[in-house]
Amino acid sequence: WSVEAPLSPSLASCTGYLPGGIAWYRKHFAVTDSAARHYIYFEGVYNRSEVYLNGHLLGCRPNGYVSFLYDMTPYLQPGDNVLAVRVDHSRYADSRWYTGSGIYRDVWIVSAPEIHFAQWGTACRVESLTDRRALLAVDYALERHVPATDRLEVAVTLRDADGVEVASARQRIGAGDADSLGGTLRLRLNNPHRWNLDDPYLYTLQADLLRNGERIDGCSFRTGLRTLTFDPDRGFALNGRWMKVKGVCLHHDAGVLGAAVPPEVWRRRLENLRGIGVNAIRMSHNPQAPVVYDLCDELGLLVMDEASDEWEFPKRKWIEGWNVGTPGFDGSYDFFEEWIERDVTDMVRRDRNHPSVFLWSIGNEVDYPNDPYSHPILDGSKINQPMF
Image 1 (cartoon, helix red, strand yellow):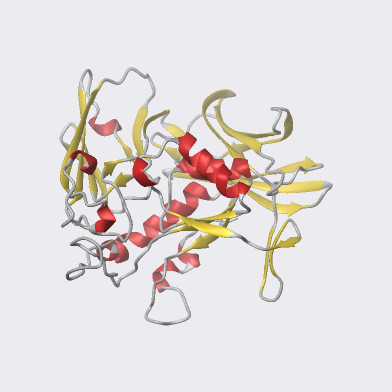
Image 2 (cartoon, rainbow, N blue to C red; image 1 turned 135 degrees about the vertical axis):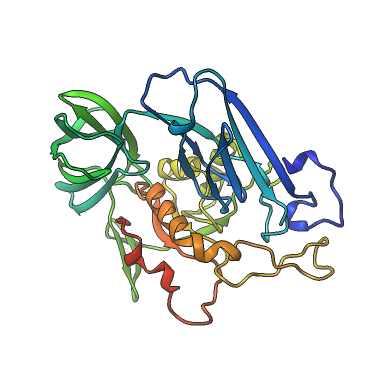
């Protein structure tokens, strides 16, 4: 929404010489779906957002680049409902690049039964992969809001690029008192087709939740089968082939088109980069829109997924034009300690099924302080999710 305000050379260059401030969005809607639960899913809101439904605070998220979901069910009412989003970009010079302001990515209403797959709760991991066979582990997590008294099963199906079923498995779910349930199924696949940069072959994994044999919920996503090897002497190998990573850094905006980037613009940009020899993209310096990862999967581009630009210590930003005056120190550092573990966990859970993602970056040009180890809050053991 900052683009609606007047430009001024005295404002920060990193904002495109546009002001910041506080903005409100309001949406009136009625629920016509008969599902038991309804969620609101934001792919990204810049930044320091607060989301209200009919006057009730659903939650807040200071990070403007992460995706997040809230349960609307307790506060929905018959007829008209009002969803309100408060965005606080008063610290407008809080990055060293153009950020945009407000709701700049897609927003979705997600409807589900009382027992359903958790958000980003299904993941496919390659346990072994040869030219003849593949063994895949499919981890799943369920949320439930009522006791599980009926017979529940999870069924997973893997289909090739032509839609032909190539592997499947089922698992009975035991009853219990916990609010969440989960498990792992294994798929065995003959003659697997690997995901490569010159042949980015994608399978589709479908997971279904069955109650007394009837499908009540499901999720699906595309994924690819590949192996990654890192060696301090030889470098990096994809599917056993040693190669050079020829990458570029890309921010989330598209120049004069701003931060709300249409998918066709991303496709053109990535195809052009691939055409000049680029084979990897660094998501500088934050998680980006889901469509970007989908396109990298499809086009055969490796991805370094990055969590943040700052840790506890802020970086200088020009707040009065470019390279003039006294720099400011607004940024994401002030919510690092409280939110970084949640932000990194959500980034990994959201993006872990993309075959293009081969590296996870926990920060850009950060010192802690000048030590050769990562921040203790980013210890991988605390992020209890498989990475690959």
